[in-house]
Image 1 (cartoon, rainbow, N blue to C red):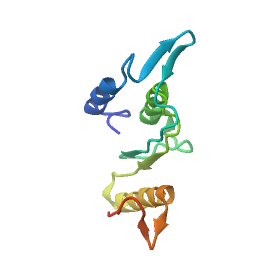
Image 2: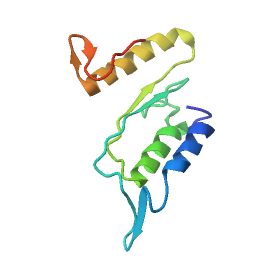
Image 3: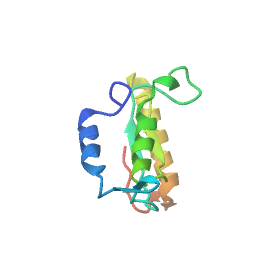
Image 4: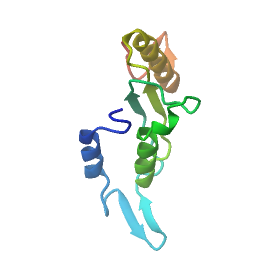
Length: 121
């Protein structure tokens, strides 16, 4: 998270991906994303916590934007995994471990290692 939303380089990359006639087609019912049925996993890092049960949830402009723009191109199955509380440093290790646990649950594990990814902190 950068200033409560996404960074400028990520925004620029997204602007290159979201293209009329390529990832979005316009028809009689309006825009239709062409990437339907695909799955994407988004991993984020945040200095604080912006979960719905926190007093800072209203400042999260990152997750809603990513869900909206990815949905616009047809990507609606989008698990977001947040490594939150990266500042202060004493909370970061616990937050990273929680994010890695979510990743392992998502991809499944065999013998303590993720099947598709080897995860290291």
